[in-house]
Amino acid sequence: MTTTPQAPGTVPAKRRASLSWLATLGTLFGLIGLIVLFSALRPQVFLTPVNFVNILEQLAVLAIIASVQTVVMVVGDFDLSVGSLASLTGVIVAQLLVGGTPPGIAIPLGLLAGVLAGAINGFLVAFLGLSAFISTLATMTSFAGLALLLSDGTTVFGLPDSFVWIGQGRLGPIPIPVIIAVIVALVIWFLLSKTVIGRSWYAVGGNAEAARLSGVKTRLVRFSAFLVSGFGSALAGIVLTARLASGHPSAADAFMLSSIAAVFLGITLSRAGQPTVGGTAVGLGIVGVLSNGLNIMQVNSYVQQILTGLIIVLAVSLSRLNRRRR
Image 1: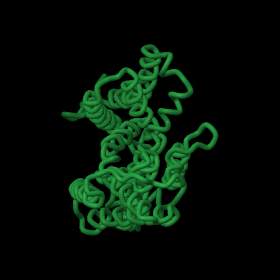
Image 2: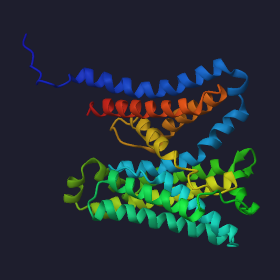
Image 3: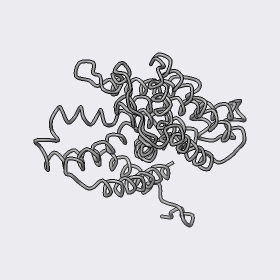
Image 4: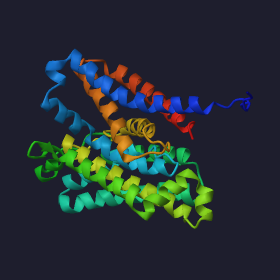
């Protein structure tokens, strides 16, 4: 009996399939394992409804940013400016509110600022053809500097209660930020799975040249993804500012890395190796449970940053294993 020789460097189909399932199950078991671990170590604190709501509330702002980061990564790009843009928007809105601008005007102006920032990113990437990594790294630095300039490097206090309610209010037992995050996630899910623009995003991310030849306006599609990212980042910054009852020029900067980690972890759940809102939600669960559990265990915040970096490496590795199956 003869066998077909394998080309040098190729991975047998059965092995590729097993690696793919390992990546997928590893992500799910990772979330379950963290829950079991912290439940065993601190059952009186971790396994309580109050802590569960606390995890959701802590994840709300990150969930908004991760949802729009998912859109950008669907088209095959990154947006490194999401965190600094959220911080900048928070400072802008806080300054407007302290200056006497009503929330009904300050909030739309903040969202408009986010859309304009997203348009800058989209123009640089889609129309000038610059690398998304380089472009958004540059705008990330610029947005961070602008936030420091507008706030004079200090925290802006004195926000009205009608605005703070957005970040600290509750609808029954559910925090308002959680409700906003769920709505954003559902809207992004609908756009990605049920609309023409969503299919275009996936087409461009899968093969931009093939999408162009089939009639998709790839530049406009990539541009629109950054518009969504800008709007969502601004919304996240507004919610965070309301939750903190202050505008800080670097309040949301750390969310950028966590959002990318969440999306990469979620990619392992997709049989096509593509970002999805459902997968990102699982990735958020891992990031949120780990952070909450480490805080309960009183682990040093510097150690938590190290673990976040390791999670990103793990997420990218698992996503690559999943892609090899195709």
